[in-house]
Length: 440
Image (cartoon, rainbow, N blue to C red; front, side, top):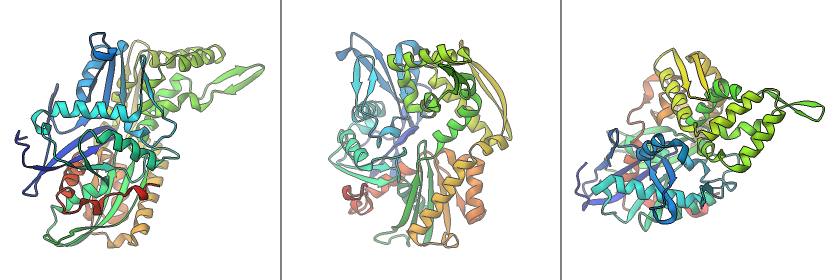
C-alpha cells in the first residue's frame, strides 16, 4: 500500500460483522485496499472486535484496542478484560441500549467510533488524510427479529461522521457488483450473493458495456438475517450447549420443567456472549444451578461466562466450519480448565444442522428475483462473496438453481470495499445510495 494519500478521491468502507475492509479510489478510477500491519503480519482485513480493560493511567480509567490488537490484548489478560466482537449485529436493535464495560456504559455509536479511531490509527499513513466522500456498505436487511433500519441509520450517522461529511450508504452486494463488473467486457445480468457474519444479502444488477455513463443498474434486492453467525450457532447448539445444560430440567416447587431456551440465547450471538458477565445474569444462573437437575452442567455454563471463554469458543467453532468446507470430516476440539469437548463431525452432519437456514436463504434468493422481475434463466453470472460462500452446501444451492458454469467467486472478503470505492468515483454516488426516507 502506497503512503501517498493525496490523490485519494473517496473511501469505501465495508464495516462487517466479522471483518472490516477499507479501499481508496484515486483520480485514475482505480481502487486499492488499505493494508494493516497487524501483530501476525500484514492483512487487508481488520477484525471487527474491541477489547477493554481498566487502566488508571488512561483518561477515564478504561483502555481499549480494536482489530487483531484487541485479540492480542484479550489473549494476554482474558480475566481482566472484556472482549466484544460482531457488535454490528445490534446496530438495528432497539433492545440494545448500551454495553456495560466495567464502570462505563457505551452506546453502539460510541463503540463504533472507538473502533474506527483504532482502525484509522493502525492504517498509518494510508488514512492520515481523509477525503470528504465516504461510501459505507450496509446490509439489505439487518440482523434481528424486528430490525429498525432508521435506528441503524442514526447510529451509523453518529459513528461514521468521524470519517467525513459526505457519507453515502450503499447496499453491500451492490458494492460487490461494482467490483465484479470491473472484470466484465460485455453486458450481463448479475446476481451478487453476499454472505456476511450476520446477514445474507442478494442484489440483481444489469451491467452495461464498459464506458457506459451508468454502467451498473440495480434491478432488485432482498436480504435475510441468517449467515455465518447462524451457522456457528448450529455447531454450538449441537456440540457445546448440551454440556452447558440445554435440554436439561430444573425443579420449580413440585414440578420438573425444561430449562428455558432463553438462558442460552446469547450463546447464539457473539456480540452478546461477552456481555453475559454481569451481576444480574450471573445471579440468575446461580439460582438456576441450585434448582437444576444437572447442577454441574449449569456450573460449566457459569464458568464459561466468568472465564471469558467466548473468544476461544468462537475460534474452535470457526475452525471446524472452515475445515468442513475443505474436507468431508473434521475434529471439533475445545479445551479449557473448565470445559473440554472433542467430537468428530462430518460435513453431512453439519449440512443437516444448517438445512433450515439454507431453505430460508433459498427463499430469499427467490424474493430477490421476484423483486427484480427476473427469472433464474435470465441471470448470466452469479458472484458469491463473503466467508460463508465457501461452504459447499451454500455454493451447491446456487449451482442447482443457476448452473455451475455461471458461478464466480474470489476476493471473498474484500470485494465489497473495492466496489464501494469505485462507486465513490461516480459523478453522483447518491444514485446508488439508500435514502433516509427508504429506511423502513
